[in-house]
Length: 403
Image 1 (cartoon, rainbow, N blue to C red):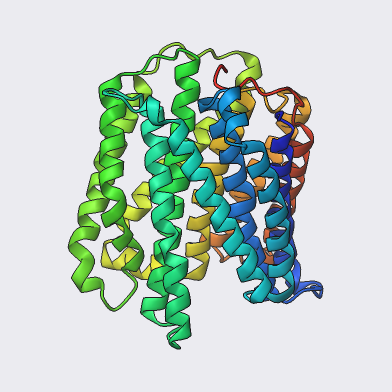
Image 2 (cartoon, rainbow, N blue to C red):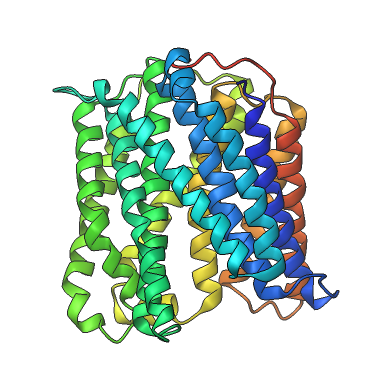
């Protein structure tokens, strides 16, 4: 198993961007598939095809040795998952939620459980009396991932009872999204970042890292209430919402102190794009947490929960700005992506396209510009950038657990 597998993960990200661009082009051309079906394919492949698979590869690469990879058949797991993901892409594009898409989604979830069980078992020796902060984040993220998988079962039950579209139905959807975005994806990505820092012997103050971990771990479950503030039950959950948002804000202080304590980072010219992705991901993370904090106040709550463009901008901020930018920085740091002029062009297109679409989504009143064309341009730039990044993948053998 070599780093070339990451090209498949980025290919799924390219498909996500291509579908997104097609959705933006709906004002100018007829789509060959139903719009709502493409929306479902877009979101499922984003979560499962891009983020899940690349985290799978990075976790096995950075935390496991070759013997563990062979024993648990991680290569086989990955290959089967690839086949299921293509089934998810095709079935959701053709039928949306239906027999085949639900079947493939169920198969994916079983494979997800297999992977999590294998990884937790293989890393249990790393959780002694003083486990490193990297494995703390990763293992915590995986447990939140397991928790998030309870939501689809609830969605199915509620739908069967004819309650689709109700607050309880939406609460299950928000439960899934919250513990995926803010639990499993975020914690694992942060853990991988810490692992690379540890492997590179970058010094940071352990107490700051531990408090950052503790505060955000403690806040995740009550922070679910932040997703429910747009519902009629908001008066009953405002206290835990304030509480969790406040804890996260304190966590940001420790993150800032942690970053300032870094020593040993090498800043050569060839690191320019890595540093850019890293810087933007940190800014996006701070912005994400601040937006969660201000959403508890009535004025901002109305904007945050009843404006679809703002919601979409926030989701993209988390998915692209926080998660994807961090992942690309990691891929370049461990030399799975070439760091050359072509990669710089690719990164520039992805970043500029992201910024353009975020600005248009948040501020949609450009009297002198057709925003549909601007959104299409931004989406197209991201798609081309991701394609070029996919082509920049190096085909080196994985040297697991010794990067």
